[in-house]
Image (cartoon, rainbow, N blue to C red; front, side, top):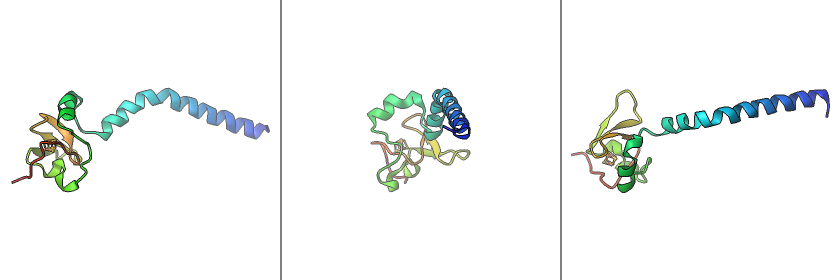
Length: 99
Ligand code: SF4
């Protein structure tokens, strides 16, 4: 191994070590950023077969009568059934069309 390859290997190893150290702290933040849903409503969401992305986009939370959009976060909104934030693209068994 040449000195150049050794330095490159050490640099890459240091980056991997830094990434491995930070990953446990970053993963929950990434998950939080992925979903708008309130972790406190997980049991209710499971019982209502909540999915973060509706199989039929025409039946997403965005077009549900129980949904109120969040002006600050377009991907999120409040659901009357879940008593809190949900993903605008989600779906659950209580979906009802807006009147
Ligand atoms: S009732 Fe279900 S489909 Fe309707 S907004 Fe709430 S989570 Fe979305």
